[in-house]
Image (cartoon, rainbow, N blue to C red; front, side, top):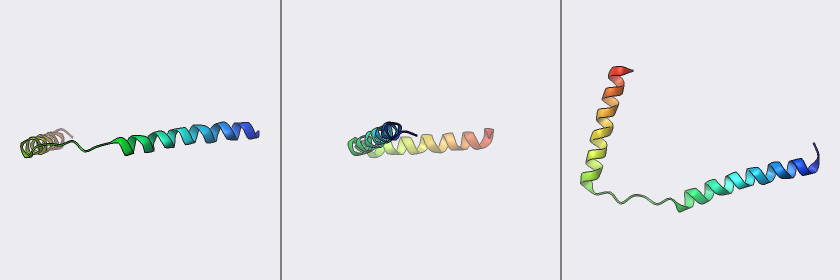
Length: 55
Protein backbone atom coordinates (compact mmCIF):
# COMPACT_ATOMS: atom_id res chain seq x y z
CA UNK A 1 0.00 0.00 0.00
CA UNK A 2 1.44 3.39 -0.91
CA UNK A 3 2.47 5.86 1.77
CA UNK A 4 -0.31 8.32 0.95
CA UNK A 5 -2.96 5.67 1.57
CA UNK A 6 -1.54 5.15 5.06
CA UNK A 7 -1.58 8.91 5.53
CA UNK A 8 -5.26 9.12 4.59
CA UNK A 9 -6.11 6.24 6.95
CA UNK A 10 -4.17 7.91 9.76
CA UNK A 11 -5.88 11.26 9.16
CA UNK A 12 -9.32 9.64 9.14
CA UNK A 13 -8.60 7.72 12.35
CA UNK A 14 -7.21 10.85 14.02
CA UNK A 15 -10.26 12.85 12.98
CA UNK A 16 -12.62 10.28 14.52
CA UNK A 17 -10.65 10.03 17.76
CA UNK A 18 -10.30 13.79 18.15
CA UNK A 19 -14.03 14.25 17.54
CA UNK A 20 -14.86 11.70 20.24
CA UNK A 21 -12.45 13.32 22.70
CA UNK A 22 -13.93 16.76 22.00
CA UNK A 23 -17.43 15.40 22.52
CA UNK A 24 -16.44 13.77 25.82
CA UNK A 25 -14.76 16.93 27.09
CA UNK A 26 -17.71 19.15 26.24
CA UNK A 27 -20.31 16.92 27.93
CA UNK A 28 -21.75 18.33 31.13
CA UNK A 29 -24.00 16.59 33.66
CA UNK A 30 -27.64 17.64 33.75
CA UNK A 31 -28.66 19.43 36.93
CA UNK A 32 -31.73 17.44 37.98
CA UNK A 33 -33.80 17.94 41.09
CA UNK A 34 -34.45 15.09 43.51
CA UNK A 35 -38.04 14.88 42.26
CA UNK A 36 -36.90 14.50 38.65
CA UNK A 37 -34.39 11.80 39.61
CA UNK A 38 -37.07 9.93 41.57
CA UNK A 39 -39.44 10.01 38.57
CA UNK A 40 -36.68 8.81 36.23
CA UNK A 41 -35.80 5.90 38.51
CA UNK A 42 -39.46 4.95 38.87
CA UNK A 43 -39.94 5.04 35.09
CA UNK A 44 -36.83 2.92 34.56
CA UNK A 45 -38.02 0.36 37.10
CA UNK A 46 -41.43 0.22 35.41
CA UNK A 47 -39.82 -0.23 31.97
CA UNK A 48 -37.54 -2.99 33.29
CA UNK A 49 -40.47 -4.89 34.78
CA UNK A 50 -42.39 -4.48 31.53
CA UNK A 51 -39.42 -5.84 29.56
CA UNK A 52 -39.10 -8.81 31.92
CA UNK A 53 -42.75 -9.72 31.36
CA UNK A 54 -42.46 -9.46 27.57
CA UNK A 55 -38.95 -10.70 27.07
